[in-house]
Length: 196
Image (cartoon, rainbow, N blue to C red; front, side, top):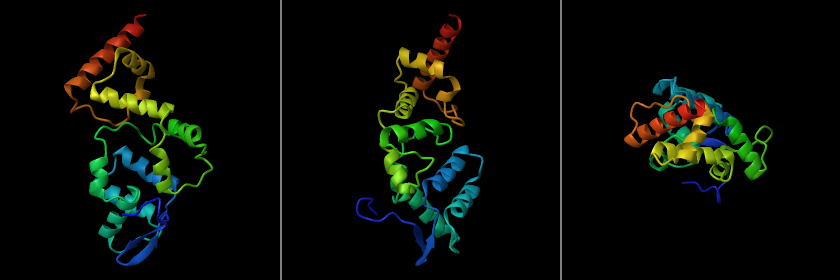
């Protein structure tokens, strides 16, 4: 596994012993992530999109190209390791939270994402350290909400935020009892707010 501390960030991926240049910048990779978040592509369409968007010249061995693309998008970690570290609760959306992410990078790291040209791995590393920002507070509140750990003040704040709190496309079919309890408390807080 490559280390961002000791290795240069990759600008190409090796498939069948041949190096293929890639679109390694944060904008191209964010385009990929946003498209995958939408959930309107089939799994096959997703893999085709990822390979076409990431590779400048598409390798012949499509399956290995997909493996390399996923390895790259996960910061040089094997897919199994990346999946094992992923939180099952989605607490952010690159598209929906774009303004907060932009502001967090500016506030926390002094980086203007509109003008910066970051390697995807640098973006990922900096993204993991966006603490003490409105974005990180929102992510923490979403996590507490879905874990069923919100207090009444937080539920009232969620009611104030309205739809911007919820991540578009998140399904509530398999919610836990705690999540259901939070939803009922949220609805009660909303009714109280609306009734003055």
